[in-house]
Image: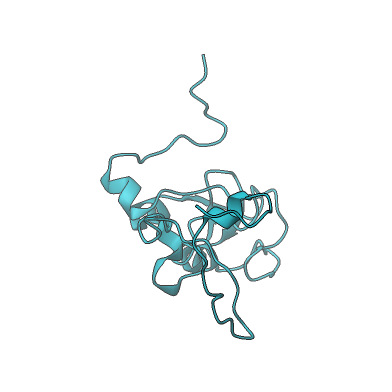
Length: 142
């Protein structure tokens, strides 16, 4: 090997690569080897991360009355609970109450409680036998 009189550096040992043409909007990205398999269930097919709750879990929500609810209004529709109202109310396992139609519609899009993000089981979890789940206040501790 002929020497040119200068110190040989590590980058001099690598083959020369032509620079990649970069467009105005080019951004280097890191691709995981198996990126398609690593996408969580709620983000596939263009969804924004929500996963609907299991229909059996939705139907099993406990009925309640406006007097028993700790909230004064429905956090989904923002209407006040009225004693004389003909709207039925349901209570999530986390004890948050909502109008029945409001929470049923919400849970068909997202399994999370609108107030505290308590998660009801998905259809896949219910089929795997993971439902009924423990409620927040009924811990299985010793």
